[in-house]
Image (cartoon, rainbow, N blue to C red; front, side, top):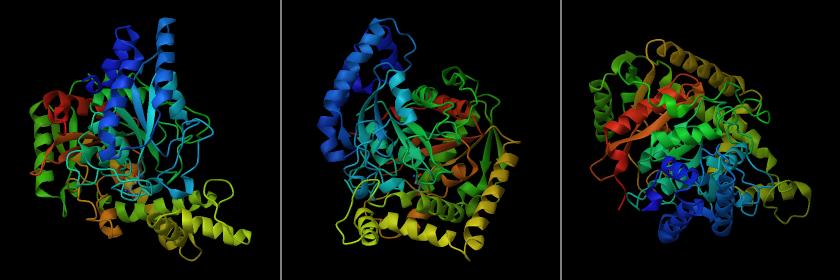
Length: 483
Ligand code: GLN
C-alpha cells in the first residue's frame, strides 16, 4: 500500500519523476477516510488544499528544482503549530475558532522542502498531559488497542504515523510529548536539542523546555525531517546557529565502539517487568553488535519530576496570560472588562490547564518564588551537570521511555499525580536540553508497544538517530503494523 511507503522512498520517487506528488497524498487521504473516524488522530484534514499543493510540487520538479528533500511527502502537524490559514486550536475551547494568520518556521521549512501538510492532529490541551485525554476537542485512540490511550501530548501525530495515515508527523516535546506517544504507539519520535529547531509559530507552553520534533516509522525518516526543519532562525532568539549536519550520512556511522551508558536511576521502582525486559533485550542487541555498555550515574535524575512540575507550570502560567478574550479566541459575554477576562478564561480553559496555571502562579508568587521556582532552577543545573559528567564516559545513554506501556482510558485521568509521575524517564532530557529519541523495541503480553530511549550530548542528534537506525536494521519491531 502506497501509504506505507517511507518518506525517504516517496521523496526519492517524486524527485525522479517516477511518482506524482499527488499519489502519496491521495493514498493518505483514503486511509484517513477509512480509519480516522474511529482513531480520531486528526482535528482537521486539508482535503482540497493538499491535492492543490501536490500539483505545485510536481511543477517544481518539472522545472528542474532539485533541493526538495521532502518532495511530495504528506506530513501531519500537531495542532499547536501554526500553519497559515488553517485552524490552530491547541485542543482547547479557548482557541476552537482560531485560524493561524502566519506560518511557523517549521511549516515554512516543510513547504520549502516540498512536503505537503495534510492536516492538524489532536493533542492534550495546550500540550499539557500524557494521554491526549485532556483535549477538549476529541478522543484519540491507540491503534494497537482502542481501549488504551495513545499517549500524549502529541497523541494524534503518533497515531497518524502508527496507523499509516501519514509517513511522518511533527509533534512538540516539553517533558516527553513526542517520545512518550511514539513509545505507546510503536513509532520513532525525536526531541532535538533545545534550540536546534526554531519555536517560532509553536504555541508556547514551557518556553525553556519546548522543542518541535519529528515522528516517523524509521529513524531514517526522522533524520530526513529533522534535516529539513532544523537550523538558525532569527525570530526565535534561543534558536542555535550551529550548522545542520547531513543527518542521512551520520546514520551510517558504525555502532561498534559506541559507548552506551546505562544509569540505574532509570531502572528503579515503578518500572514494569515487561518494559524492563524489552529494554534490557534491546541493550543486549546493541552490545552483541559491538557497542560497549558502561555504567553511569545521574544522582539528581529522580528529582526531575518535582523540578519539571514547578518550572513547566510556572512558564505556562506566564505564557497563558495572553488568552484574555481580547487578543485571541473565545470571548465570554460579560458586563465589564474584568468579568469578561475571567469568564473567558473560566469557559475557555479545561481543568488541567487551570491546574497548571494555579500551580505555576503559586510557585512564582512573592514569598514562594525562592522556595519553589528558584530552587527548581538550581536542581535543573545539577541535573544538567549530571548529564555533562555522564557523557564524559559514554556517547549515548539508553533507558526506557515510560515505566509501563499505554494505559487504559480513565486509568490515570482522575489522578494528576500518577499521570505526572509516569513522565519520570522523559523529563530530564528537556531539563538538560539534550536530544533524545524513542525507538520501538518490542511488545508487552497484551500486544502494546514498548519504546527504548536513546539520549545524547547537545547537538548529537546524528548519533542518537544512528544508534536507533542500527537498532532498527537489526530488529523488525517497527515493521509490525496494528491490525
Ligand atoms: N506530560 C508532560 C506534561 O504534561 C509533558 C507534556 C509535553 O511534553 N508537552 O507536562
